[in-house]
Length: 370
Image (cartoon, rainbow, N blue to C red; front, side):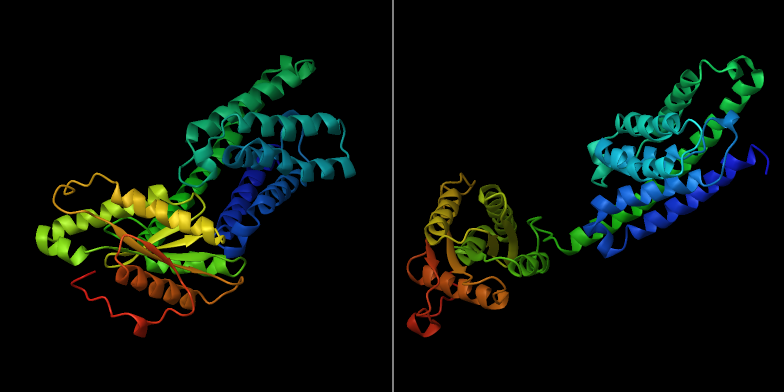
């Protein structure tokens, strides 16, 4: 095989491996183990680049390219972890000047590429700039030349042509990898956007009941939680007085207040109509009562545009899971019963669910009085 065919073959193999790795990202299990999978797959790709011996004149076998992508996407920690497996391979099957190889092809690329890492690259909500990859390849080419500054090959014109060729190949390979990632990432972002919209209430921009049930169902399997059902008092009267447009605006404002007031680890969603629902991680009854009162006060004290004409308040019902893996449907039903008692007892208040609460103990709250 010609000396110049080796890097081209490695580049093609690298692109194929990267394509497989990108498709693995769509596997549900991959998200759960990505912290380990990314360094492992990157390390394997680097080792495959090393399997084919390359002429010393080339100075590189492209084993640095996977490390560069790891540093760009995930930062220095993942880049360093990615270099451990190929580093161990070089140590177990040492080549001439193996320590120099590890430093040049693994350690330096991990550090240099991480300098171009951006947080938005890691979370998957931004594309990688093509110029970042090209700058990294240029810097690594310069570093290789400096590391070999003492070699007699530097005086050769063929050496400089070879390094120019290697820069072209490595730059093209990294550019293709960046393009593939960005193209796949755009598809992934579109899927996430569609999923978000499917689980988001169009009016309040809060999660809808579908999204809430998914989150709450997964949470309740591992820990105790509390459910808070919230209803805007006298909402039908407000709609009849000010119209549905103002009613929609009130829903948006109350939703915004709730989102800003809940504890950071909690989850609020629109349940439907004028009702909202909160998943709380607090399981202390007194803390939940103080929490509910804080929510009531936040709404009651908010300077709504129509405050001079009507007072806006909320009523809350609270149910507390007795154990982990409780029945979510039952919890919501209990919170709803407690909410109705809050309505019956005068509104603008909260009620903790008790087993004695029953619909026959108080009149049904009509739509007119809600």
